[in-house]
Length: 338
Ligand SMILES: [Zn+2]
Ligand SMILES: [Zn+2]
Ligand SMILES: [Zn+2]
Image 1 (cartoon, rainbow, N blue to C red):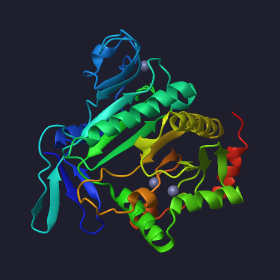
Image 2: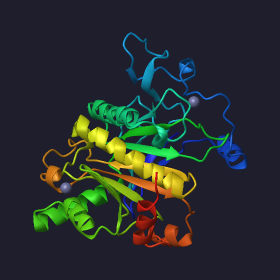
Image 3: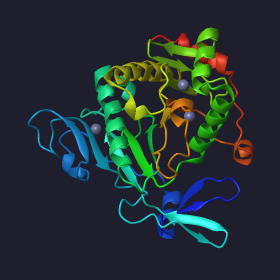
């Protein structure tokens, strides 16, 4: 039985019970299972569950070829789309059912591993699909937050080497988002300015942590980056809600993402990359609670290269030892040609 359980000390939610014990011990004994034929290539539509959404060429039929971007449910997803949230307590503990959506966004019909190797126009279609799916899931009142994220691995027979990302809609707002919202809110309450707008201004002025800059986006290694070469892509024009960006901005985001990911791939020999989009939650649980959220929060995309494992220090403190100064990482990336 899968459940969401809240850690009463830290305040984050854990998804537990996703495997039975036989599956678990099988998994730790043999975590790597080879993928045969790629299930995401055009022409293999029957291998995946029925599509939820697709960007299609005129007259092409659902679940057949003729698509540019395709969204399907994740067959290995940990959330159940059916059922009620069932928030409840057990003594002092809080828990709820693992109700949620887990979708896979297949980013190209061609067998290409890295999103950074797609054209800006194709990446724009992917970004617009992220927006459409988040907006659609917002209509489901059981959900509080939708997170877009990517796990891009090095080429391996154990992974699907075909560009795709994940979208998870959950009945909770993740702790990291709540913390960002809280700090942005406190900054706004004190200064009547957006914290991330002020960070952008300072970063543009100093320039020492910039990776790439366009009219619409700044790509930079944050002053506080917790991983080597962690890079954020942030819109220059204030906006709390990623889904409200127009076509010009989504195309500009596609270009920034392509440039930044291409630099990371080139400099670091195509490392494992994760990224996530941090945008506002679905604002309905406590109507009026986040009165200034549209002024004080600012959506952004965080890229996490996966170069080192976690040690007892990171696990024990929640803090990170980041061996390279962010200014050094930024300079190396800035000077990497693409
Ligand atoms: Zn493929
Ligand atoms: Zn802002
Ligand atoms: Zn963030």
